[in-house]
Length: 75
Image (cartoon, rainbow, N blue to C red; front, side, top):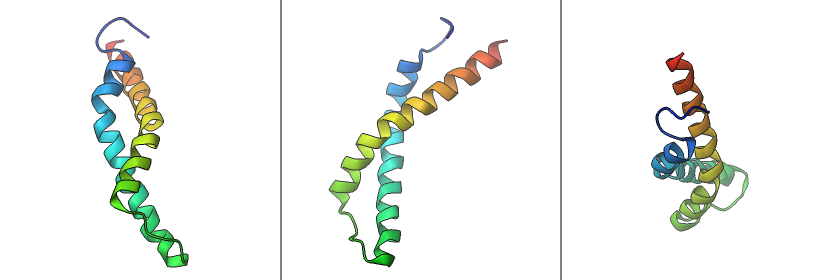
């Protein structure tokens, strides 16, 4: 990576609340779809907790993608 601009870590830290929120919504809606086949619907706290956990790798992957786009735009 280049030293120009934000690091991948800084981008990930800024975007983490959005990534965790998006994952929490996705987990909740997935549990609603799962209820069609008899699975339980997750509570709000479970959805937020699982979203917070799976939001970490999702946000890191997205931050790397954004950093690559920033590097490409500079060339």
